[in-house]
Image 1: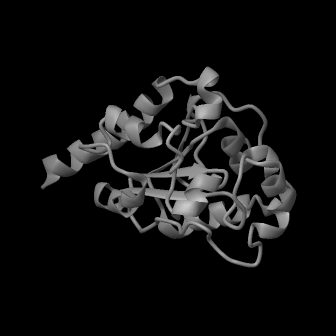
Image 2 (image 1 turned 180 degrees about the horizontal axis):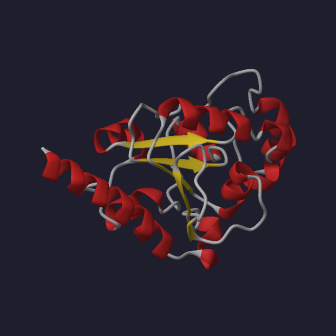
Length: 189
């Protein structure tokens, strides 16, 4: 981000507007991914995980959650695979250190989980998980306690900035959970 953009960021984040990138939620989802907030690239594209250096879309395909690698603009198609998307901060964009703590809305996330009742929620970074769960430094992977009835996964951030912390294992665990639910539905059909 250029210095001028950074200096103007708090005023240009459109705090009064709701949902810079709209939630992708519906009842009965297998998994909802939750990040902190859109990146500047995602905000500009009005699409989740739109920064070219972000591994989110490649990872979804690599772990078998989507049959092909989707472009970020195709994010609404995830509902067809019973996958949803949201962020803790729906009114700002930027890197975690640029976001205001008062705009992180864990209570809203909890309300969404109660309303839509997904089987699982996967935080796409330890920071998002810490904010959403209200506890410091959760471990990667499946958590022992549910959140509003949803199984919880903490994933390594797919951001290019977090590449040194990257591990695919927690993503595989979340995918295995979803793929088992899909197999169960197929057996019941």
